[in-house]
Image (tube, rainbow, N blue to C red; front, side):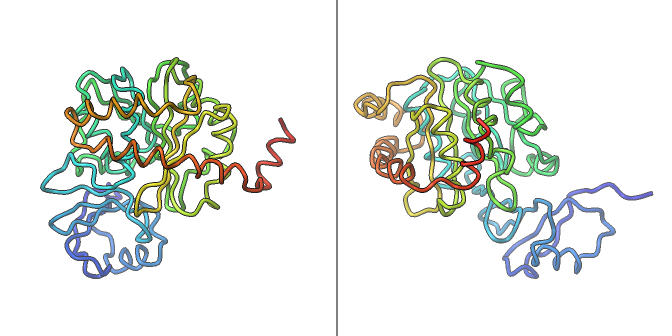
Length: 300
């Protein structure tokens, strides 16, 4: 009988990493072959590396998918996750937040702790990512439910039940290819209640996600604001279901003062960085359309 995968712990030194490697594998697996597959990028499954200070989730050694400080497991270790939480400047009391992409559970944990009256739904397609969530201390109770599903199938199942929708769905090659369609972003908009907000994480060169931004901008009829994460390779898009646009920054600026007392985040800094993002949006709109977008427009 074939052994079922379990959490197997191995030294991380063979990967050039300090600390320990954790994988979902049977006890009879060949460690040398496992290391070779991870180093070559052919492993194809999520794994954890822990160095005593941080516990990190990888799909590939090319980049870290998620990071947790062991001494402060509820902190948002990555700057882009802190910027995604800027949704509170626009929707300060969400009743229901849907998150696409679990990763190491940084944002679900933060929201679960600091938004005690908010219902949280996390949509994750990868069963192994869900299986590793306990290693990152992700709670699962009546307020935080993890749903194993493809977001492209899950989002159209209901309408207007969500105040905030966070898109952070990545695989080993970048943004999930299932997102690259007008239907996907249209379904995402339909999930939002009046006054709702979609927040999307785009990572890497704009060449890799420009088509996503343009589809999002089209579906939300131009009500999309884009901000770059300082000293990082992430861009965060805020798409408004029905808010006035361009944004009046006076209200978020005033709200930041109140939020600074409620959450361990610098919302005044976030307001300043978001306000600086208006030029980014204009630059992206002036880029030539990709071949994919031309095909989509012809079909439409």
